Image (cartoon, rainbow, N blue to C red; front, side, top):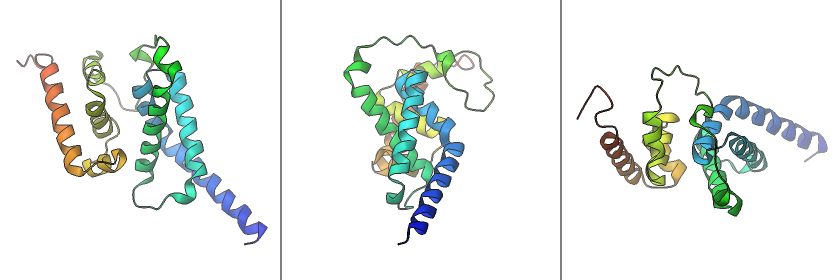
Length: 175
């Protein structure tokens, strides 16, 4: 392999990274914020995710979409941050108003649904965020979480049931 072909490969990787950043930065930021509850930490996690993606770009095997691959990386990065002693022992004062905009108009001004989602168990919250906030299919969720499709389906059903129960009476005065 010549030096020129190596240079082109690095240029191709850089171009692909810039493209990935343009396409997925906002959705990765939302995931990171939901996991970490802090905008600055979420930005750091997104940066780390893109660095990891660039470093391991040659290992991507096209067995899934790049969005799925990046989502797996951001989730693992956020889990690492949450495991740190610094994260566990600090106070989080960031409000839900700081959640980065998803790009869609929000028709409800209260945060009841978001609070209900955030109060779910970690496993239930993961599937809800991936399904409804990232608009992934159940097979994509299974790939990201590295679980069988049936497990992803049952987690999603359980999470929806918990949400239905916790939001009872909130939407159209249902009881």
